[in-house]
Every structure is written in structure tokens, then in C-alpha cells.
Amino acid sequence: MQAPISIQDKKAFIEWFLNHYQLKKRESVWILNYLVNHDNLLNNVHFIREAKFCPRGIIISSQCSDDAPFRFYKNHLVTTDAEKSFHDIRMNREEALYVQLNFHNSIQNASYVAVLEDNPFIPEDFYITKSDEDNAKKLLKKLVYDREKKKIQEAIDYSLDINDQQMFMKLTNKLHKLETINEDQPKLLKQ
Image (cartoon, rainbow, N blue to C red):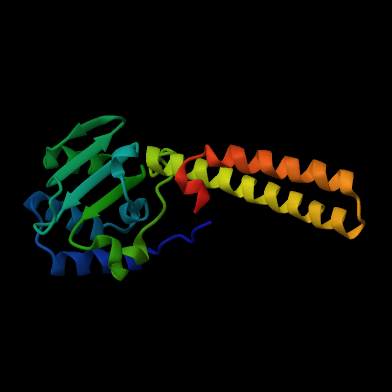
């Protein structure tokens, strides 16, 4: 479980961010300044990634970002109207507000990472691509194949140790079948 981020840390980060980045929408500056000046509201602010999945999320972009300037999400509705968003933030101070900031190298920025929290609303498979899934299946097949082959080879060694020719023949046939099946597998499995 992640430790909660203190209000002081959030304030310090927002102030740092405002001093180092120019935002695409001036209303975004107003919203961030409003958050800094209201501790009770800042207590419910969570810096996350992928705010679009949150029940109440806001995306703010700096000039150095290629992302959209501003988005506010509330219960699957989205608006680019910062004034309406500001009104919602003021009127619903007790609700959690999830904030995503888009700026150059945000993923590598230590100040941002220090206040970043896990987004509990991201779907489980969001970061998994079809290619990742296929590679995971291939890797699993490879691991199962390697384990089975090793098990058979150890049994073959044992049959030689005890001089059991019938067991040896049975196991070598089994190993040959396993290797033949493996030849039909995609090349990744043979690496």
C-alpha cells in the first residue's frame, strides 16, 4: 500500500510546477493556484496518470506537451470548459479529484514522481498490448517445454545409471516426440 502524500508536498510540487512550466490554458493556472490555497481541498487531490478513467479527473498540459490543453472528466462526461470545471471543484470540495499533468519528461521528473499515486481506476489490461499477451503465451510455452525436456533428460540419465534399457528407450522416444512438437512452435520458443 502506498503512503499518503502530505498536503505540504502537494503544495510544494504545484508551486514548483507553476514556476517551471507555462500552461496551455491560463485557467489551468487559476485552478492550480486555487488548489494550493485550500488545504481541505488539496487533501482530496491525487496526482495520477490516465485521469480519463477516474470518476472526477482533470488533465492539464504545459506548452511543452503535445497533449490536449485541458480536459475535465466527471462520471464519463468530458469538458474542455475550465470555468465549469473550476465551479465543480469549488462546489464539491469533499470529492476526490484526480489530476494528471502533461509536461516534457513528466515520467522522469523526480518532483512529479514524488507526489504521483497509483490510479485505482485504470483497467487491469490497460497497459497490456496484444503483442505483450502473445509474447507472454509464447514464453510460458517455452518455460513448460524446457521444464518437461529437463525432466525427461534427468529420467534418461537415471535409466542409464540403473542400466534399464526399456525405460531408456521409452524416455528417448518421449523426448523425441517433445522435440518434434517443439519444431512446429514459433521461432521465439527455440531461442
